[in-house]
Image (cartoon, rainbow, N blue to C red):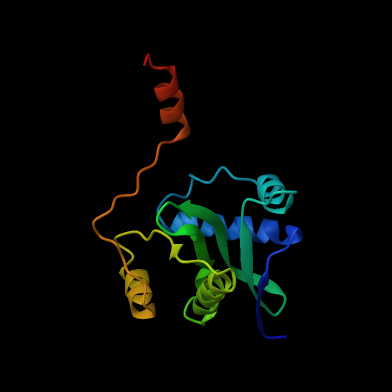
Length: 160
């Protein structure tokens, strides 16, 4: 059967969620995932899907995935955000990650986009080196800023 990189389907979402959880564990946040299969199915496969997912299938089993969605840049117009790219630990080094990465970049090119963007942890030197070798620029003078659900609630409930 071999390796296949393809667009993900609704029925792939249980395997995609497993991979998301594996990535969270790799990133030292094993309990942070609250997304469910139902959420992935609803948000990715309804009338207005919020994301696209590509999967790496090896001999009929999903061993990796890349999840992307559109963003809008005031400087560039529509861009593509790569939220997650993960390959099962036992399949790392097999070329699946590179194949998924290529698929994402090719997809952006096909869509006529001006930029693909993503974040990488500062301790993941292997990934940083890979991205730089591929021609990507790692912006080391920007911080990722997030506000979690608790922060949102507290902010909104505070007097203006």
